[in-house]
Amino acid sequence: MDVQPLRVIIAEDSALIREGLARLIVDSGGIVVAKVGDGPSFVEAVVAHRPDVSVVDVRMPPTQRDEGLRAAIEARRRVPGTPVLVLSQYVERQYATELLADGGGGVGYLLKDRVADIREFMDALRRVAAGGTALDPEVVAQLMVRRQRDDRLDALTPREREVLGGMAEGRTNMGIAAALGISEGATEKHISNIFGKLELPDSENDHRRVLAVLAYLGT
Image (cartoon, rainbow, N blue to C red; front, side, top):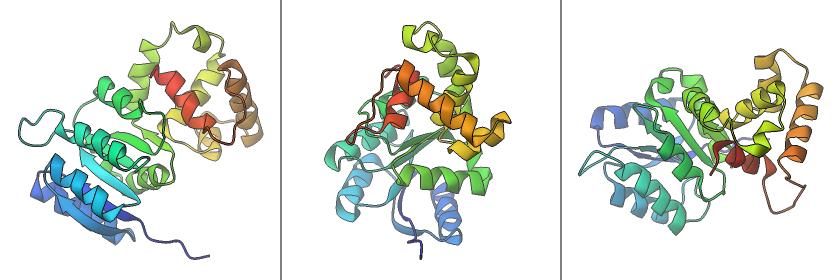
């Protein structure tokens, strides 16, 4: 079965970085349907092109603060569920939680340094396009410290916390198993226990994996 190439929008005010991202995506088999340098243009491009996923810099003109994040949130409001991978120079916990706050999945938050690992970046892009999450390990580590007093999370064992951390990063069951040195069967059992302890019953409408991550982040 042929895999359709990802249709991507890039929102980045630096022309050099924008073109570099475009080249990376095209060389990896994707299609860049639009390249923009500011928030409003990004929102318009999402409405016009309905991409499979977008890559957005957090800081864009005019203030170079959080215009990219605001544009990403607005784009998801205008086109519900549109997948967005946000890139940032530094860890900003608030940005990650705001992006995830609608509970829809299909979001990612990576440090720009991660783009240097092309395979890791493209894997994250594909996970987000498929409706999953891709959070930078540095963000996950900081959020873990912040959420240690959450009652529901207190019910998790140390291993279950590690598994949930892997889920937050966007790893598959196989990826979590490999990272923790356990079997896929054990990973599946831990995830089932996590769903039970976080009171996330099976549902046709809710993505329990995403909801578990949202509980983990406290959004």
